[in-house]
Image 1 (cartoon, rainbow, N blue to C red):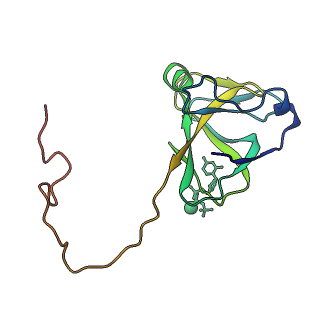
Image 2: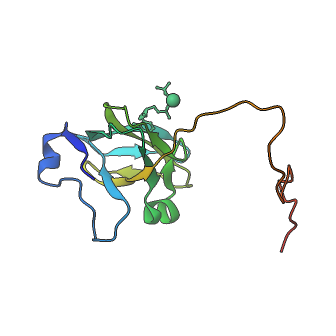
Length: 149
Ligand SMILES: O=c1ccn([C@H]2C[C@H](O)[C@@H](COP(=O)(O)OP(=O)(O)OP(=O)(O)O)O2)c(=O)[nH]1
Ligand SMILES: [Mg+2]
């Protein structure tokens, strides 16, 4: 699949967004910052990535996810938990960087802070009904209805 990409931060030309390994699902996103950004414990800041994509096809979306190492070891996750990039969004990709940890975390300029995963999407047609046409094994059971363990 080919996706249009705009580089908004010229420094990214030396470090373009690439899949780190042939099997990588995520494309690392860098912090388009000119100075280090200190995130106090609990702080959340919107960080630009210096790039924009246009998926164009409503059959796709992109998700912004935390990087595992930063999230687990340093508490750097996302203020929106997951970022959803619509196929018609053409603006700069933004990362809601949230320090959920107990120590300050400093984001360095151009540091890889999150990752982008492109996923297929189904836009359904919804047909209103009075009752569902088929019963299912689960029915309306949820929230632990199948028990624990
Ligand atoms: O982490 C994120 C999440 C969203 N976006 C951009 C792309 C997305 O297509 C747009 C809108 O996101 P969303 O629909 O999740 O936010 P909203 O609060 O519903 O805004 P809107 O009213 O613009 O749809 O913002 C980002 O750059 N980063
Ligand atoms: Mg929205």
